[in-house]
Amino acid sequence: MKPTTRKIGHCSSYIDPAIGFNLLGKISSIKGNVKKNGATYPISTVILYNRKTYMPVCITKPNTTGGYKFAGISDQFSAIVIGLDDAMQYNAVIQDNVVPK
Image 1 (cartoon, rainbow, N blue to C red):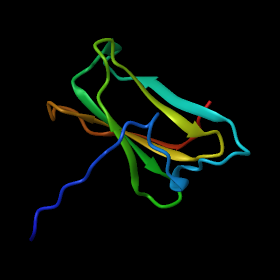
Image 2: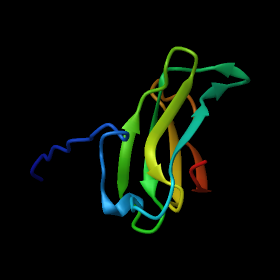
Image 3: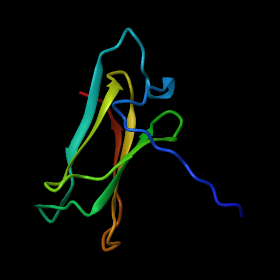
Image 4: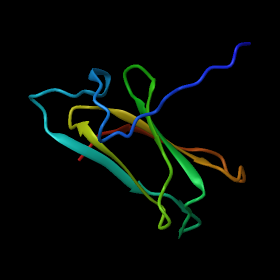
């Protein structure tokens, strides 16, 4: 199998028709906090997927307080957000049908 590489752009500067960017909708964001047993948990990766195509749109790491944000997304975009534990101690957390606000 041949290795591949992918270039992931910052969501606020990455404009792609697949994420629902258009001149008619409002530009919004998807944000949240990563927690483990109620405490902030910055040792993780958060991936934003397009709900219609199941293609990854953006990948980010939470800040030191566990917060993450995907900015520059149309309010008409529907997404799946997956949180992965980088320490591999917990299973992935999946939120389906997430819409920007």
